[in-house]
Length: 165
Image 1 (spheres, rainbow, N blue to C red):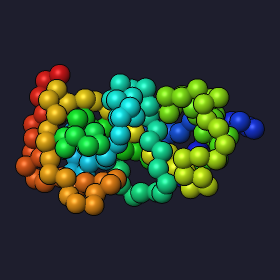
Image 2: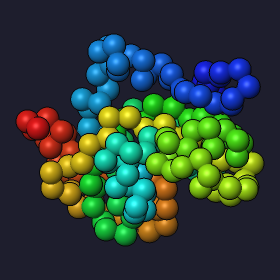
Image 3: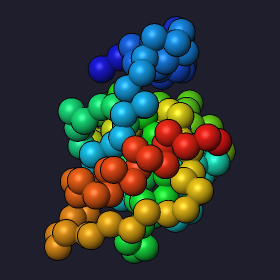
């Protein structure tokens, strides 16, 4: 887990390698179309697409990195894309409070052990952008967190992400 700590204040910021490379113009992985979609409920997916939330809290780690599609839960559509750059955790309540802004929350809104208890991980997302037109996909039975996108959907995302903004 990559953490930059400020003495006595918990997790202050994350500088994952992919984010540092992207900021310096070295990374190009977001130019590729995502092949997996992360299912996120409202209002959280809206906050991510608006740039107000860069941490998505989950109860476990994942090895997935790179471009991903953002799926609005219950809509059957991919509504955006982003870069999945890191996983931090497990995080304590104090660390969550210190980083409340990354969750589009105020410090005082984060109380007691909640979310996933001792197994709360921050999935770090960057470069989120909303698609001009949502792309429908076939939702597999039982998919709750990730969806492997069909090649036709991936092709549409590649075309839409290369279109002028």
